[in-house]
Image (tube, rainbow, N blue to C red; front, side, top):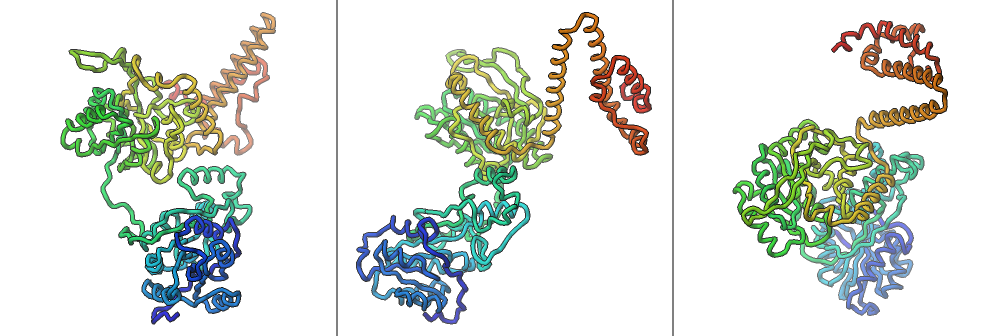
Length: 633
């Protein structure tokens, strides 16, 4: 067809064979599932295959749908090859909206179009092309469905190599040299909607190994490497499509959308902190107290999302009254979000999804934030941007009470500072030592990394989420008590709502998660692990010697205990700060061969006399004498 004065765009042609599990087979499956009321065996019902290339769809589509196959392509050779096979073909350049619509109407004539396909065409168009809109115009006139496919640039093979600094453009495939733009799932569907084509179903092509799976020995691609396991776990948690090579969508024509063509950075104003507060509306007095404490924060750069979980009408009215009674400035930053599904974790996922803040914190309706709660998080964020923020929560036992016919709570004991002042990742691998009121999470963990609360867990969902987040972004700690974690001594709580067996099943499920995937250890974890190994070795060594000593005579027992005590004296000197700080004084002697590094293990089988001599030499050494002022302090 003539295309006017506008230069045609070179579109990559469909090359390949039909297979039931490749892009052509999946496209045909979608078309079969979306048959229209049109009588498909009528001679005037056609399927348009745009930029058809070698036309892999021609034979199977004709046999399956019994429609007349009509192929179009910008290459005269492709059209000639198609007609030589006995199929109808036309030369049509994909140029712009008006021209493509006019050309296709000329091809169609008086016939009825049941379906249209664009297989691997869209990525070859420049972003400003409106060809899709022209296709939509024709589809709308005939009530036809349109199936479209593009390669997925976010396949794991592409992303893992790019993370290590490698980008391999190939003649065809996911990173085809002829591609003018690349797509992930969201940008692909946005392009379709902008053109008035609205996806109704998908049948993507999934391949663990794409055409980008090379070089074969690349460490990020090898399935058995820890690097591959870590990258794959992060990629799959972030969202679907890690193994998708082709996105395939079937669309119906409809209105054009007015959304932005390209994604732009968020330029609005975000509060520092979004506070997610779960409530069932059964303890309104606690909700009042928690919100009152938030109103008294020294830093008020926050919003509050009250997640009403399965509220009755009466409970909802009560929660709404509590919010209405807030000061105006805080009422304007507080909103009630109803959640009618799921268990304990469901409101957290809804709240985190709704949160607008740079950081997101959890505050259950029966816990208390002290006045510097938000301020402490903000101070940590300034010094450690992007990390999880962790302060200290103190525990307080409480019970429900009634005074003058009004229900309230009272403490039954003193405030207990029982949780560690800092976050120890290794310790947290065996048990949670951080109440959720003590943590603020960076929003990217949920919104970009796709780390969500596991709704299959009925308890300990916060421990699971904390550890998955801490492994990725690390934790910045402040040893300041900023909140009270209320522990219900009487009445209903998560401890009474779930029996011990349920708690143990959730605990074991989380431990299995730790073991099934590579874990990225925060900076400083190796120091902690070495210390634990040293403590273990010393305990094993001590137990072994005690067992051996038990078999000795009284005299021999006394001699051996004296020898062991002397050996520990050697170890204590070598482990002391004085000895470590004076290490530079010993370097020159070792450089000229007049000294060697001293280890306690060297003297494990030395006699008491030999060990006494070692202690005398260590205490008489220049290193020990030079650090005498340090020991005095």
